[in-house]
Image (cartoon, rainbow, N blue to C red):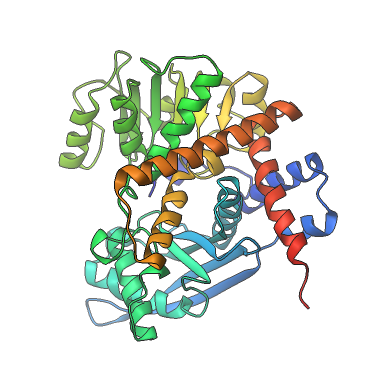
Length: 425
């Protein structure tokens, strides 16, 4: 789950769904994608729009709007998170579903892409209201989800507890426990070890590979992280343990920077105590925008989409941008960064650790055979390293940036599966 930012600070004129389609269009020419397959992949397979009546604590009913989008299922059942947020839109959910298709294909796991969302403000709701909302939303989308069809997971403002309610609601409808219907569950009901840190750990692995090919030592490499939710917090912690120097972080309420390096464990404790990194005594106060432009070797956008734009891309000083968030870089910014020699590790690569360990959780649930965390982390490392190398080799061969390299690998795999399966009827 990513930390949220004030969307007024990240608005762009480009619609996020159009952005996702443009990324596909750009790579279609590169790989000479069949025009019919290209047209097929530009649109989602299925869009479910539901009204969700919820009993509130005061006894009244409120009607919420929810979505579940399945972009493509040629390589296997759909996979993707569910977010609860007041600014959820159908176009956003469609874009995220498409990105999930490419992400699963890039790390070569047998899933297609999906995404869900409910327009609500979870911070203004009680736990009982959230449970009522989750269970009713689950009942409305139960016609399209299931361990063989579509497997949801946590995303923005959804948690392992919310996944437990989804799993229980779906199981009650089936008449028996179905742990494989969701991932990101608590360990007590079939969750996987290592899942909470998987996105951050996967990001760490690909950053280390990027440093290797750029011949930059990780020891002392300066890292700035925008967003200090699940992905950003664990990325800071894991990178610090591997010898990186965390020089700046931010969340919704502000940020803090110290060129000599922040005390990450102290920062995490401060966040736990106060709810924000703002006000931490170990550095100088900065803004979210400052974090993006600070002097560092590695920049990790771990918040929301569209924060790196044509306006600020020329001021980014990092040598590597590792997209722990979904869609943080606009296409016009990609071109600027590539021209300046900045290596962008795209979201479908840099944050694919979460869905990879979700896949491991799904496999463990189906087999009823659970693995030790060391084995999970080792399997994750191998998947992420292979995905990086596939991307880097293709990008180098075609003389394109890493995003186009990643998309070329992923879209080619989905297109091949789509072509081999053919069209029914």
